[in-house]
Image (cartoon, rainbow, N blue to C red; front, side, top):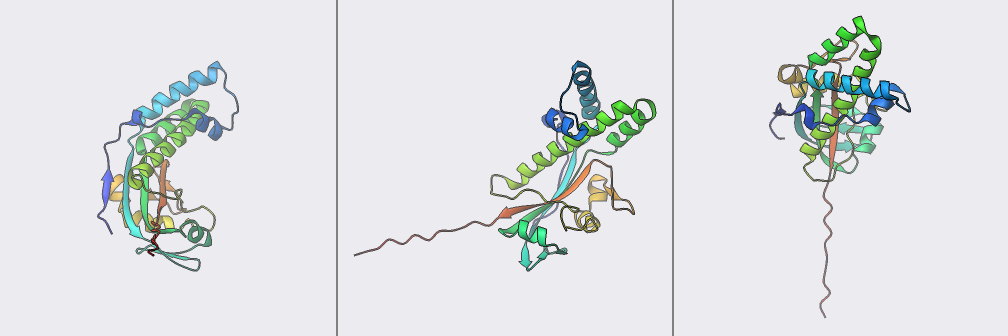
Length: 208
């Protein structure tokens, strides 16, 4: 198992906010000039407020039936077992945009709720972009499966605490957990990224 690594040096503007994702979170199909202007304003606010941080750790994967053994935790989840079936290692990650984003939401919720909603959707798009960045970084060109988070399918949300404790995420990047298992800062994500095992094909040459 590799040592804990923390990523701090990520330039916000290196992370792309995809407009189509923002629109999807807002459940809006088309945008007019007013919406586009608001999206630009909110994107700047979110970029300026965000402090993207991530922590991750490599683990071995062992699966028996519907139980996934990740070393630090055993998860009873048929969905996760199926998802990691072709993997013998994985990366446990936690990412966050920091408390500045929550302060931004609080500010606009008091004075302009429409802008607060657009900022929320924009921040959701940014944390997804950051997760993609971290995903690419840890996979490093290998074949991997899509990241899988607590709360998906039958992967119980209660495992959020065990993941955060394993990564020492409170101390390292400031993520805490409420009694209702919601992460603070709110724009935070934990996930498992499975690395597919290498398949070695033995080739034999027939000799006369």
